[in-house]
Length: 87
Image (cartoon, rainbow, N blue to C red; front, top):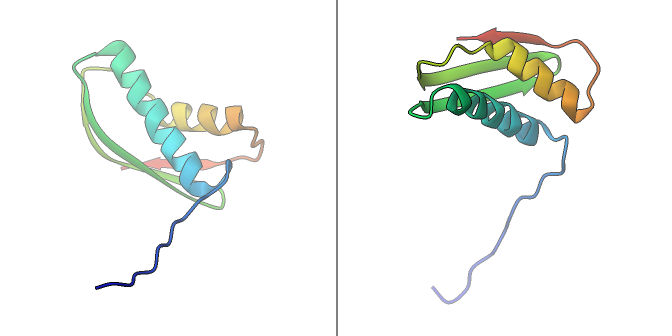
């Protein structure tokens, strides 16, 4: 194949994908701070005022996932109330 089309996606700060990545990273950071042997595969999804946190958490750390997510959102600058569900 001699021709191809190159495409890429770029999202800006505050985009839901970036917010979700930051929430998941914050959860991982909190786990590693308490238990350096933590193995995490945590994801977050956000739609409007609803945040869903899910995945695998193999850690001895005691984490308040909801508080971490809400604190992360607040630090970004969002002041609206959000509802968090952890499954």
